[in-house]
Length: 150
Image 1 (cartoon, helix red, strand yellow):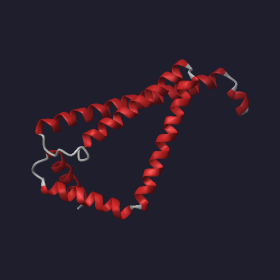
Image 2: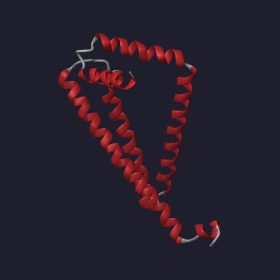
Image 3: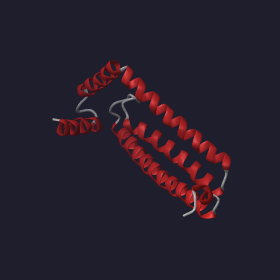
Image 4: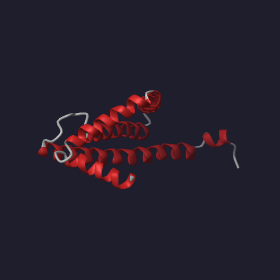
């Protein structure tokens, strides 16, 4: 069996890495589109009812932003791998590293400010309970949590 350095010099290794990255990016772009479509659908339904007006309380906006980021980043990776464009691949790597760093920072801050995070969620839930029958999405989420947790 050839060593790793010899294997790296072959075209088979190159094509394996290239198409693995391409398949990974294609799957994530499809997932991003699905999340984006669900977010758009949820936002359209929320706007029809005009219930809770707070943008922070709308999970559809979070889904739309998440879907856009997933789709954009994965398309950059897919195009970079197909075209062998080092600039796009470096940009793909940098964006993934920044997103990973932001997630780590967010987790660290949530753990450091655990009491404030808990108080924020509790106040949001209490405010939502006041408008329990006004927002069907929040009502369904709260009912689901009560069924699964209790």
